[in-house]
Length: 176
Image (cartoon, rainbow, N blue to C red; front, side, top):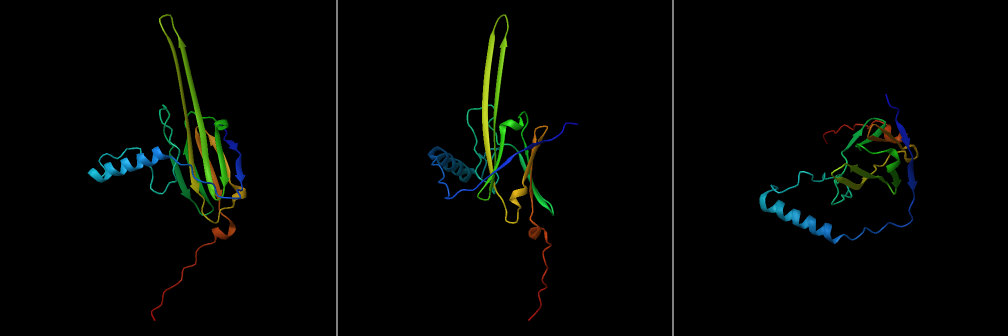
């Protein structure tokens, strides 16, 4: 059984909020998607549509690996767990960063294939990168965030603080 590799989680503190980059073509694409959805009740909707509550991931175009990785988010009594499927990647190509209440997972995959035969020469290169960002809920102990990578699966553990782990108190409602 292969042993999991721990990845460093970088913590940054920013003084001023950053300005979102202007992406006119992405805005146009959203408008065209909305037009087609309104036209036929979603018949033209892409099967790769984004989840409703997810932040905007970076989705590269023109790449054979142009997909946002599948991510599962789970909550336990003691922590939140984010699991991302990153097949064919190495831990050295993955970056996990926490800044301003946002956890960002970023990665890049480069694939080169070269084949020389008597009758032909084949050279292929494909590159792809992704970025997923998640708003971290209050009550997470940010100093104890850990990331591990094993067999193409990235697991990020966001432990809850002691105060956040306390059970919620139920308050009975009485008739007046």
